[in-house]
Every structure is written in C-alpha cells, then in structure tokens.
Length: 244
Image (cartoon, rainbow, N blue to C red; front, side, top):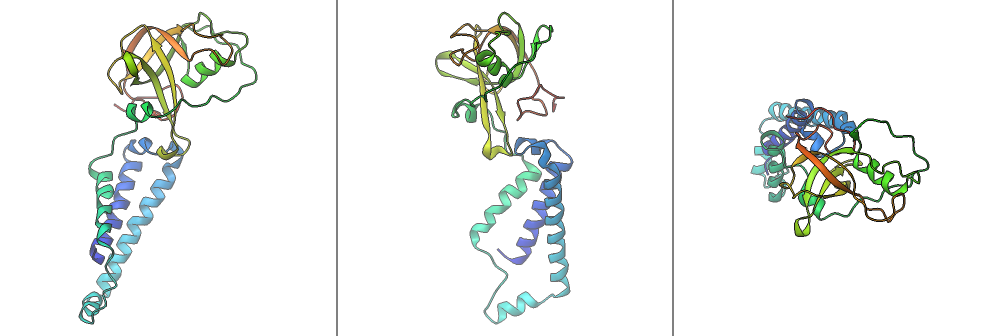
C-alpha cells in the first residue's frame, strides 16, 4: 500500500466515523450511546491526521521518488492492508447489519441478577415491562404480583425449534463484542418472521412455581403489533422513538 493510499484510508475512516456518529443513529448498532463522543473524537483525529500527512507530503514532494530511486521504499505497508478499505468504505456507503435473530439463536439466555425486594406494580393495563424485569418478577418476586397481570413487552422475533419462538433483546454492555441476550418464550400464536420487531401483550405462561427459579420466563400471547426498531434497540429499556 503506497503512502497516498494510507493517507486516503485515514481520511475515509475518519469521515466514516463522523458520518456514522454525527449524522445518523447507525453507531447504535455497534456501541452504546455513551460512546458517541469518543467515536466523534476518533473520527476528527483520524481526519486531521490524514490531512496533516497529506500536507506534509505536498511540502516534501519528491522524497518518496528519491527513496524508490535508491532502492529503499519506506512508504509501503503489507498488501493485506488494502482490506482495511472495506470497513472504511462500509461506514460511508453501506452499514453492516445489526445483530439480530441469528446471533440470539446461537446465544444462551442472560442470567438474571438476584434482586432484593420489589416495588408495587402500577395499576396500568397492559403494564409496560422490559424482558429483564418480567423475568425477574416471575422468578424472584415472592409476592407473585405478576400473576394474572396483562403486560406489554417489546423486542424482536427469534425463531426456535418446532415452531417455537422467543421475544428477544440483545443488550450491549459496551459494544457488540460483549452482547448478551434476554429472551421470553411466546405461546399461543405462530412465529412471525425472524427479526420482526413487535409489541406483545399477554399474561405469564403457567409453568413452574411463580416466584421461584423454576418459573418459566414465558408469556401466553393475547395480541401482537408490529413496530419499528426503536433507537435504543440494544438495551432492555422501554422503547424510545423509532428509527424510521
């Protein structure tokens, strides 16, 4: 890779990071929202570094030719470095797809942390809940407050074996590399297409002893409606404004 190409790569990567983090929400497919400032700073630094190198080469024109003439070229990198252009261009032209049903189907269920005590549930019906909150209530709330309550949860569809399916959320601790999966098994309705985002209403599916670890994290579905993927798709929070 010639020095000119190296400079171009720095500039393209910087522009790609700035495009993704400044002008779109695409960065949320790969990292948590709190890392946005670091992406912007990284993009600015890469862009400035590339421009600085370009300016330096312009002011010292002919040095590379001089090195070539004397048989010692210090401006090249291994040929495999050309592959770095692919992710750099993808940030500008084609964003890689977000994690979804395929990833979730090959991941285990997130272990729910032990919780001491639960606040009273509001009387709202259906009651909006996250998948983690629902699982925690079902398996740890000794008061069994979730019994008979109609809840509403949002997530995407992960097909299982034999027509089974889960409502799913993938959760980033930091970025896609450390993603964890939380799933609720759905009963009473055929599996929608994989990766479909849904708001699902229903009641706890009776299996195991409610309020103990034997209780299934499962729902008898009363109704579903399609929703757009929310901005905070890679958290297990109640959904924010959709991206489309």
